[in-house]
Image (cartoon, rainbow, N blue to C red; front, side, top):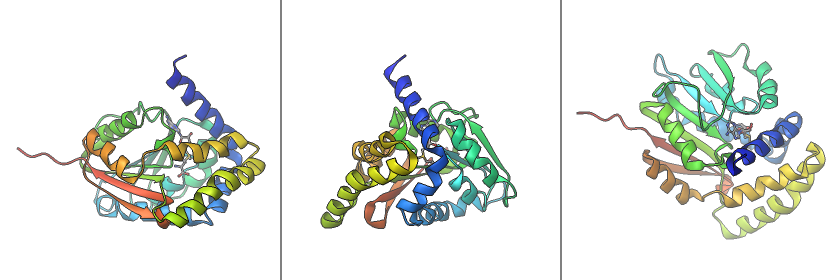
Length: 238
Ligand SMILES: C[S@@+](CC[C@H](N)C(=O)[O-])C[C@H]1O[C@@H](n2cnc3c(N)ncnc32)[C@H](O)[C@@H]1O
Protein backbone atom coordinates (compact mmCIF):
# COMPACT_ATOMS: atom_id res chain seq x y z
CA UNK A 1 0.00 0.00 0.00
CA UNK A 2 1.43 3.44 -0.92
CA UNK A 3 2.01 6.06 1.81
CA UNK A 4 -0.84 8.19 0.39
CA UNK A 5 -3.28 5.24 0.36
CA UNK A 6 -2.35 4.33 3.90
CA UNK A 7 -2.76 7.96 5.13
CA UNK A 8 -6.18 8.15 3.45
CA UNK A 9 -7.19 4.85 5.10
CA UNK A 10 -6.08 6.15 8.52
CA UNK A 11 -8.03 9.39 8.03
CA UNK A 12 -11.17 7.49 6.97
CA UNK A 13 -10.92 5.11 9.95
CA UNK A 14 -10.30 8.02 12.32
CA UNK A 15 -13.47 9.83 11.17
CA UNK A 16 -15.44 6.58 11.41
CA UNK A 17 -14.34 6.28 15.07
CA UNK A 18 -15.29 9.84 16.06
CA UNK A 19 -18.41 10.11 13.84
CA UNK A 20 -20.98 9.53 16.65
CA UNK A 21 -19.59 12.47 18.65
CA UNK A 22 -18.43 14.61 15.70
CA UNK A 23 -21.32 17.13 15.62
CA UNK A 24 -21.48 17.47 19.38
CA UNK A 25 -17.76 18.23 19.68
CA UNK A 26 -17.76 20.60 16.71
CA UNK A 27 -20.50 22.75 18.19
CA UNK A 28 -19.12 22.47 21.74
CA UNK A 29 -15.53 23.45 20.87
CA UNK A 30 -16.60 26.37 18.72
CA UNK A 31 -19.52 27.48 20.95
CA UNK A 32 -21.66 27.05 17.82
CA UNK A 33 -19.56 29.59 15.87
CA UNK A 34 -18.89 26.85 13.27
CA UNK A 35 -22.55 27.25 12.22
CA UNK A 36 -21.95 30.94 11.52
CA UNK A 37 -18.76 30.11 9.55
CA UNK A 38 -20.78 27.78 7.31
CA UNK A 39 -23.52 30.40 6.86
CA UNK A 40 -20.89 33.00 5.95
CA UNK A 41 -19.46 30.56 3.39
CA UNK A 42 -22.84 30.15 1.71
CA UNK A 43 -23.42 33.91 1.75
CA UNK A 44 -20.28 34.33 -0.38
CA UNK A 45 -21.75 31.98 -3.01
CA UNK A 46 -25.31 33.30 -2.92
CA UNK A 47 -24.99 35.40 -6.10
CA UNK A 48 -24.21 32.20 -8.06
CA UNK A 49 -26.51 29.81 -6.23
CA UNK A 50 -29.60 32.02 -6.59
CA UNK A 51 -29.40 31.75 -10.40
CA UNK A 52 -31.89 29.39 -12.04
CA UNK A 53 -30.39 25.93 -12.60
CA UNK A 54 -27.51 26.48 -10.15
CA UNK A 55 -25.96 23.36 -8.65
CA UNK A 56 -23.57 23.02 -5.68
CA UNK A 57 -21.05 20.38 -4.65
CA UNK A 58 -19.74 20.02 -1.10
CA UNK A 59 -16.63 17.83 -0.89
CA UNK A 60 -15.63 16.15 2.40
CA UNK A 61 -19.21 16.88 3.51
CA UNK A 62 -19.03 14.76 6.67
CA UNK A 63 -22.36 14.86 8.50
CA UNK A 64 -23.80 17.25 5.89
CA UNK A 65 -24.08 20.52 7.84
CA UNK A 66 -22.76 22.64 4.98
CA UNK A 67 -24.76 20.61 2.44
CA UNK A 68 -27.94 21.54 4.33
CA UNK A 69 -26.93 25.22 4.40
CA UNK A 70 -26.17 25.21 0.63
CA UNK A 71 -29.47 23.50 -0.15
CA UNK A 72 -31.32 26.57 1.13
CA UNK A 73 -30.24 28.18 -2.16
CA UNK A 74 -29.72 25.39 -4.71
CA UNK A 75 -29.77 21.61 -5.27
CA UNK A 76 -26.63 20.22 -3.68
CA UNK A 77 -24.48 17.12 -3.86
CA UNK A 78 -22.35 16.07 -0.88
CA UNK A 79 -19.39 13.71 -1.11
CA UNK A 80 -17.38 12.03 1.62
CA UNK A 81 -15.35 8.83 1.77
CA UNK A 82 -16.37 7.95 5.34
CA UNK A 83 -19.56 5.90 5.33
CA UNK A 84 -20.34 6.51 9.03
CA UNK A 85 -20.22 10.30 8.60
CA UNK A 86 -22.63 10.10 5.64
CA UNK A 87 -25.01 7.84 7.59
CA UNK A 88 -25.20 10.49 10.32
CA UNK A 89 -25.80 13.18 7.70
CA UNK A 90 -28.59 11.29 5.93
CA UNK A 91 -31.49 12.22 8.31
CA UNK A 92 -30.54 15.92 8.04
CA UNK A 93 -30.90 16.06 4.26
CA UNK A 94 -34.58 15.12 3.99
CA UNK A 95 -37.22 17.82 3.42
CA UNK A 96 -34.77 20.60 2.64
CA UNK A 97 -35.71 23.50 0.31
CA UNK A 98 -33.74 21.98 -2.61
CA UNK A 99 -32.80 18.40 -3.47
CA UNK A 100 -29.74 16.87 -1.79
CA UNK A 101 -27.81 13.76 -2.82
CA UNK A 102 -24.98 12.25 -0.78
CA UNK A 103 -22.29 10.07 -2.37
CA UNK A 104 -19.51 7.98 -0.88
CA UNK A 105 -16.42 8.88 -2.93
CA UNK A 106 -12.85 10.14 -2.75
CA UNK A 107 -12.28 13.90 -2.99
CA UNK A 108 -9.26 13.22 -5.18
CA UNK A 109 -11.26 11.23 -7.71
CA UNK A 110 -14.76 12.68 -7.84
CA UNK A 111 -17.31 10.59 -9.75
CA UNK A 112 -18.79 13.48 -11.77
CA UNK A 113 -18.29 14.89 -15.25
CA UNK A 114 -16.12 18.02 -15.46
CA UNK A 115 -17.58 21.56 -15.35
CA UNK A 116 -20.82 20.51 -13.70
CA UNK A 117 -21.13 22.74 -10.64
CA UNK A 118 -21.54 26.49 -10.09
CA UNK A 119 -20.02 26.30 -6.62
CA UNK A 120 -17.71 23.77 -4.99
CA UNK A 121 -17.18 23.93 -1.23
CA UNK A 122 -14.93 22.08 1.17
CA UNK A 123 -15.20 22.74 4.91
CA UNK A 124 -12.46 21.44 7.21
CA UNK A 125 -11.68 18.77 4.62
CA UNK A 126 -8.81 20.02 2.47
CA UNK A 127 -6.24 19.69 5.28
CA UNK A 128 -7.02 15.97 5.48
CA UNK A 129 -6.26 15.16 1.84
CA UNK A 130 -3.04 13.34 1.03
CA UNK A 131 -2.34 15.91 -1.71
CA UNK A 132 -3.81 19.40 -1.23
CA UNK A 133 -2.91 20.63 -4.72
CA UNK A 134 -4.47 17.53 -6.30
CA UNK A 135 -7.63 18.22 -4.28
CA UNK A 136 -7.76 21.84 -5.42
CA UNK A 137 -7.21 20.69 -9.02
CA UNK A 138 -10.06 18.19 -8.75
CA UNK A 139 -12.37 20.91 -7.35
CA UNK A 140 -11.34 23.16 -10.28
CA UNK A 141 -12.26 20.38 -12.72
CA UNK A 142 -15.74 20.21 -11.15
CA UNK A 143 -16.44 23.94 -11.61
CA UNK A 144 -18.29 25.39 -14.56
CA UNK A 145 -16.35 28.29 -16.09
CA UNK A 146 -17.58 31.28 -14.07
CA UNK A 147 -17.95 29.05 -11.00
CA UNK A 148 -16.43 29.59 -7.55
CA UNK A 149 -14.67 27.42 -5.02
CA UNK A 150 -14.99 28.10 -1.26
CA UNK A 151 -12.50 26.53 1.11
CA UNK A 152 -13.41 26.86 4.80
CA UNK A 153 -10.55 25.61 6.94
CA UNK A 154 -8.86 26.11 10.26
CA UNK A 155 -6.07 28.61 9.82
CA UNK A 156 -3.55 30.66 11.68
CA UNK A 157 -4.77 33.36 14.13
CA UNK A 158 -3.35 36.73 13.21
CA UNK A 159 -2.98 38.62 16.53
CA UNK A 160 0.14 37.53 18.48
CA UNK A 161 -1.28 37.26 22.03
CA UNK A 162 -4.55 35.70 20.86
CA UNK A 163 -2.53 33.29 18.67
CA UNK A 164 -0.46 32.09 21.64
CA UNK A 165 -3.48 31.61 23.91
CA UNK A 166 -5.39 29.83 21.19
CA UNK A 167 -2.44 27.57 20.30
CA UNK A 168 -2.10 26.57 23.98
CA UNK A 169 -5.80 25.67 24.13
CA UNK A 170 -5.76 23.95 20.72
CA UNK A 171 -2.68 21.79 21.40
CA UNK A 172 -3.13 21.08 25.13
CA UNK A 173 -6.74 21.37 26.26
CA UNK A 174 -8.84 20.51 23.20
CA UNK A 175 -7.15 17.08 22.66
CA UNK A 176 -7.88 16.09 26.27
CA UNK A 177 -11.58 17.04 26.13
CA UNK A 178 -12.04 15.79 22.56
CA UNK A 179 -10.25 12.55 23.35
CA UNK A 180 -12.29 11.94 26.51
CA UNK A 181 -15.66 12.61 24.84
CA UNK A 182 -14.98 10.93 21.49
CA UNK A 183 -12.86 8.05 22.81
CA UNK A 184 -10.09 8.94 20.33
CA UNK A 185 -7.21 10.98 21.72
CA UNK A 186 -5.38 10.31 18.44
CA UNK A 187 -8.07 12.15 16.45
CA UNK A 188 -8.01 15.24 18.66
CA UNK A 189 -4.20 15.37 18.64
CA UNK A 190 -4.28 14.96 14.86
CA UNK A 191 -6.57 18.04 14.56
CA UNK A 192 -4.10 20.71 15.85
CA UNK A 193 -1.15 18.93 14.25
CA UNK A 194 -2.80 18.84 10.82
CA UNK A 195 -3.72 22.53 11.12
CA UNK A 196 -0.11 23.39 12.06
CA UNK A 197 1.09 21.65 8.89
CA UNK A 198 -1.56 23.29 6.68
CA UNK A 199 -0.50 26.40 4.70
CA UNK A 200 -1.28 29.74 6.32
CA UNK A 201 -3.73 32.17 4.72
CA UNK A 202 -1.24 33.55 2.14
CA UNK A 203 0.22 30.10 1.51
CA UNK A 204 -3.19 28.77 0.53
CA UNK A 205 -3.77 31.79 -1.73
CA UNK A 206 -0.51 30.94 -3.54
CA UNK A 207 -1.47 27.26 -3.92
CA UNK A 208 -4.90 28.15 -5.30
CA UNK A 209 -3.40 30.56 -7.83
CA UNK A 210 -0.89 27.91 -8.91
CA UNK A 211 -3.72 25.47 -9.59
CA UNK A 212 -5.39 28.06 -11.84
CA UNK A 213 -7.96 29.83 -9.68
CA UNK A 214 -8.37 33.54 -10.28
CA UNK A 215 -9.70 36.36 -8.07
CA UNK A 216 -8.40 34.43 -5.07
CA UNK A 217 -9.15 36.14 -1.77
CA UNK A 218 -9.81 35.21 1.82
CA UNK A 219 -11.63 36.28 4.96
CA UNK A 220 -10.23 35.63 8.43
CA UNK A 221 -12.95 34.27 10.69
CA UNK A 222 -12.85 34.70 14.48
CA UNK A 223 -9.40 36.27 14.45
CA UNK A 224 -8.03 33.77 11.92
CA UNK A 225 -8.92 30.60 13.85
CA UNK A 226 -10.54 29.75 10.54
CA UNK A 227 -10.36 31.33 7.10
CA UNK A 228 -12.62 31.24 4.09
CA UNK A 229 -10.73 31.24 0.79
CA UNK A 230 -12.57 31.94 -2.45
CA UNK A 231 -11.33 31.46 -5.98
CA UNK A 232 -12.88 31.45 -9.40
CA UNK A 233 -12.67 29.43 -12.58
CA UNK A 234 -12.81 32.26 -15.05
CA UNK A 235 -15.06 32.18 -18.07
CA UNK A 236 -12.55 32.55 -20.91
CA UNK A 237 -13.83 34.30 -24.01
CA UNK A 238 -12.44 34.32 -27.54
C1 LIG B 1 -13.33 17.54 9.69
S1 LIG B 1 -14.49 16.68 8.75
C2 LIG B 1 -15.44 17.98 8.01
C3 LIG B 1 -16.86 17.58 7.73
C4 LIG B 1 -17.76 18.69 7.27
N1 LIG B 1 -17.34 19.28 6.03
C5 LIG B 1 -17.93 19.77 8.31
O1 LIG B 1 -17.89 20.96 7.95
O2 LIG B 1 -18.18 19.46 9.47
C6 LIG B 1 -13.52 16.12 7.41
C7 LIG B 1 -14.26 15.15 6.51
O3 LIG B 1 -13.43 14.95 5.35
C8 LIG B 1 -13.60 13.61 4.94
N2 LIG B 1 -12.48 13.26 4.06
C9 LIG B 1 -11.16 13.31 4.36
N3 LIG B 1 -10.43 12.92 3.31
C10 LIG B 1 -11.31 12.63 2.31
C11 LIG B 1 -11.17 12.20 0.98
N4 LIG B 1 -9.98 11.95 0.43
N5 LIG B 1 -12.28 12.02 0.24
C12 LIG B 1 -13.51 12.26 0.76
N6 LIG B 1 -13.71 12.65 2.03
C13 LIG B 1 -12.62 12.86 2.80
C14 LIG B 1 -13.65 12.83 6.24
O4 LIG B 1 -14.23 11.56 6.09
C15 LIG B 1 -14.49 13.77 7.12
O5 LIG B 1 -15.85 13.46 7.05
